[in-house]
Structure formats: structure tokens, C-alpha cells
Amino acid sequence: MAPLVKRNHWVIRLTHWVNLVAVVLMAGSGMRIFNAHPAFARPGETFPLNPWEGTSIPAWLTFGGWLAGARHWHFAAMWLLVANGLLYLGFLFFHGEWRDIVPRRGDVRDAIEMLKFYLFVRRDHPPQGKHNALQKSAYFAMAVLGIVLVLSGLAIWKPVTLWFITALFVNFKWARFVHFTAMALLLLLALVHVFMVFSVDPYSLRAIFTGWYDRARSPEARNARPFYHLFGGTRPAPSSEAPRP
Image (cartoon, rainbow, N blue to C red; front, side, top):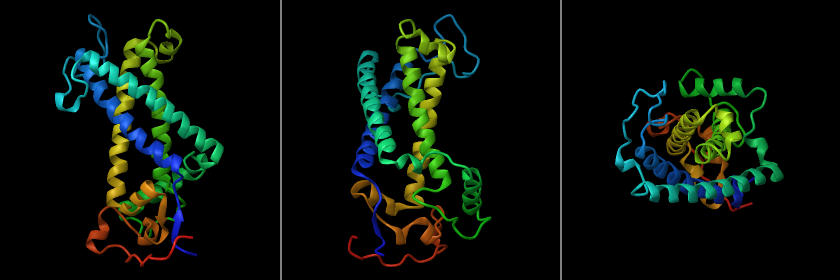
């Protein structure tokens, strides 16, 4: 069987890149909005979980220029994220690819085995399918964080009109804290994702652009740890110039 396989449907590739744009716009504009009042509580209130109360985020990390401009960008990106998220989740459900990211029995055990491999406790790469257990957990967490971001964002956008959503987070300041924390966690997961792609499976970049993936160069086939292959620590990757199936 030829090693080149169709791995990512065009919907997955499209929503992946649209998500990248939407999240970057929302994060930058959101931090600019936060800087207009760098605290989770309203003026005159206090919040116990922010030791940097009143400290602004560095301007170079923000986007939008000023408060009103940042709000326009933020809400535009929000609806883009919502529409794109609905397309992505709908595709996963109707195409059956939700099975690739939904947690299953045994994922905790498999995640521990992957950690043991990355920490050089285990010698050989654990068997995996399209994604290993750590990847599945990260992708599932990203989807959950996206939902939390939208709900908490609506809660702080219209805390009176949408009081029933605000109540899910107790009140306005807790909704703002959850919104900020969820975005920070999403950005952290995204950075880890990018790091792992370039350090462990750079060959997967082809799949997110064209859809095609070379199984002969998968991390499992190469026994790949982060950057370990640069020092001769993995099995040599076989040639894969076979025609497409």
C-alpha cells in the first residue's frame, strides 16, 4: 500500500486556518479591550485571583489601536469564530471524524505512555492512529475552550440582557476572569501544538495544506521525539516517492 494517504478533508484544512486568523484577531483585540480597564472587577470592586490588578498588557501584544477599534475587530472575529466553529463541529459530527478527538477509555493510559516516551523512559513510540492520546486531549480541550470563550464573551458583552448566561459564571467579574483564562489556555495549547508540529512531525504540514500525509514519515514510523531526530536518535525515514493512491 502506498504511504501517501488523504489525511485532512478540505473542511478541516479551511477551518484550521480560519480559526488561526480569528483567534489571533480576538486575542490581540481582547487584550487591547482589557487594557482600557486592566482588572477583572468593575471600578470600586476587588478580585482575589489577580495579583497584577491594574497592570496593562504590553501594547505590542494588542491589536485595534484604541478601545472602540478593538471592540469592532473583536466582535467581527467573534462571529467569524462562531460560524467557523459551527462548520467544524458540524463536519466532525456528520462526517464521523469526532471519533478522532473525543476522549475514550484507555486515553489516560495511552497519554502516560506518550509522556514516558517523550521523557526517554520508554524506548519505542507507542502505537497510535491519526492522533496520539496527548494530541486528542489537546484538540478536544481546544474545542471546549472555544465554547467557553464564546459563552463567557457573551456574558460580559451583555451581562444584563443575557443575565442567564452571565449566571453560568456567577457574575460579571468571574465571567471576565474565565474569558481571559480560557483565552490564555487556548493560546498556550496553540503554542504547544505549533512547537510539537515543527519539532516532532514537520511532515504533517503538508497534510494541513494539501490534505496528503506520508505515513512512512509519521512520528511512530520514525520513533520521533522533539528535535531528537536532529541528533540521530530516530530510525531513518524511508523514501516515499510513491504515487498517490
